[in-house]
Length: 427
Image (cartoon, rainbow, N blue to C red):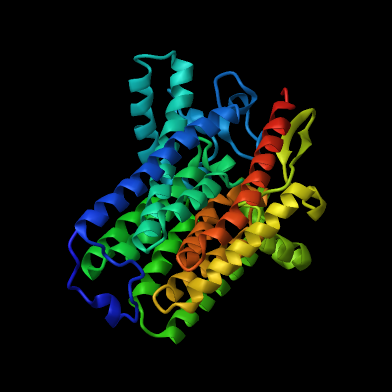
């Protein structure tokens, strides 16, 4: 990779936070990023099996077992011989699942079916597809880290922490959440590593199609990122942001009033929490910064005539035990320290604001629409890690170790609690 002579990013008011290193150093950095990405692929495969995504388990026999996820139905949609009915509106929200991700998963299924029983091949194909895409996203964040000067020792600790995020219990499932997580991570690094305005725009168009086709609301991130990088006027950016917020809130209010004439998906999952219970909405907005990294102990709730589900609803702060509470304090300290460092530097400040805006948008969106708030956390968990990486090179290894070690202990405790709750469900 040669340094570009295109200074368009400076004309747009941006200075790229990634400095292109020398070829020999670049090779080492690429190797570390690739290693982390491959490790993430393996981890997501292992994690999904650890969460009982295996043939004839409760996770693959029905839906709404883990945080309202539709794993069993999703495997049929991705790898099944026939596509199960779920209403036409689903494929409007997730159109590429039918037209891109299903053919890709079916190809893996047919390949694996040459060696394994059909049922296991179908389940593993879905897990493998999502693990590869989500792992690529982790590798992209790793490339951002090493290219922006984060030391190898820092990277090792931080990415161990990232792979243990509680949100990864959703990312690892063979559903669209893990795909969106990987694609959004990739979209984030586009302006950070591509200096050419023309090439950058082409990449944004391509990734916008992939992201919007996977989960339609997520298309706003690459579009907002493109506008954020391209526009020079801060006032114009603020104006566009406010217009987007008002448009989303207004649309939600209108759809809520028209819910009788909308599809069943809106009828079921419009919560309008931000209007009906602003205090609870504020609590979830704060939680959106915490529980993707370290969630509390879940509960097992009955959802319908003897059918149970692992859930965080209804949420109370007392769900956190003392071990997880220590982890929360460590995480919050690390997040705010790194975000503040990122805001203090001119080269990284615009990207910090971009990520903070995305976190705010998701907190608002899922306080208007959605059932289990935590289920959607893969849409922004990567952004929390992005904030850490933008400021991590200004933080000492001693500080990172002091924060990450108790956090990792708490994360492992939460993962064990989730699996224990999951194993308690027999049907």
